[in-house]
Length: 131
Length: 498
Image (cartoon, rainbow over the protein chains, first blue to last red):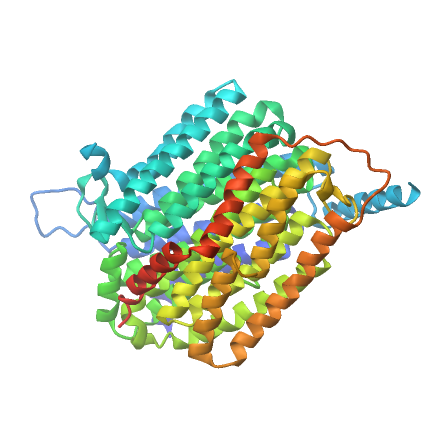
């Protein structure tokens, strides 16, 4: 029992973070909080990759004279460097869109945005009727 | 020339990518439009060369930087991937030549060069998605194409601020989908130690029944299903297509979801095909079948009640994606071939429909919905003629491409499921006639007496439109090319299954 929890400690962290991130994206009304949730969600994946690249007691993958030296798998680390860049780009694009949404709507709350859209729609509709 | 032939698989990706960098810094919009066209034409040229090569060799494997797979990244072009390559090349060529007038009127002036740059970046990303045979490289291209597509959608904010929210929703859902995919790839790498697709397909059966592989498969398929907008994961699609600048709607509607569907087929047949019987993926087949039937009806019904024409076409796209997935979910040669036939045909149909609809709204400076424009078809006979042909093609009338794909889909469905499935397909096609008729009636019969708009149709707008309309009819009469290449693709995909 103890081994099941603490032996795979990293994976528990990964999936807790993953669910927290996904929950924030789904439940929060603020667009900014959604982007934050998305960032947490993506970070959990980085941690997942790093976890199975790591070997206990392993060093950096550098050629030494000692041929029996244990080293960590470098490939997941490299992949995650790419994924971090992608994650930063996603967050940056999301934040840039939020700035523009705030300028256009005067709010970054999902409900208020759809309320503005609804008001616009009704104004357009009544204009047509008056004509 | 020999050098070009050798490097063709990377050239179709790198040409738009490099041109996008040049286009971004050009101050003059006309120059950037010209370079965009040049890049698309070059890509089309390379794709044609590639098509000739593939018909001789069956499979071209390209090692990036001469690092041999499975360690290096491998690009593969075979009979399957050549189909989406051609779709992207042809559509991007026609849509870029069509784009100039629309971007000038629908995008802020200082952003036009950047829009062209993003446009080319999207094409590069989509091309990369199709050619790469490395599971992680696929994720990178997925993000290149979808991030630039999001920015393109948000460019529509000059016309309607809803484009910003549509882009934002597309970004969030797309990012969740891509992250799901990358979780799956990670789990798969954790148990098999490789990222190369053909290497994965050999190593997965050796693992036997493994929980990680099942979870990985689920994550990957779910992630791609978001990108492919398969019902019920399609909610980002209607708004993104409706509020994007007009040329972007055409490009995305005709290529983005098609490429995602191609990846879905690749994952389920190339990577997991070899372990098909170990995990009994038969059950997944029924889930996809059920979802595609739901999509067929949900998309059509939503389209019937939709007023905004661009959104109506987007809802109809959801239904058409249902047809394509239906073919794949049959897992027979005829079924997969029919879904590839519809993949090509639907790209032609939707590109034509979006082109004619946005051309009408361009001349009249209005969004087209059920009431805003009536009888406009009489003032622009060429555009309306193209619209009619494409709309009838969507409904599946004989002598158009739509008929060919419906015919083969119904045949395949009847052969493997019996009479009930063709009945459902026909029912949903009949329902689609309702919204098509709604459009035609509004555009032709409701003549508005007060409307004194004088419209002169511009050749740079109607020539690409007529080309695509011609393709719609030509491949409806002489469908041999499409059918043969689809059957070859289906055979190549099913070879993987054991």
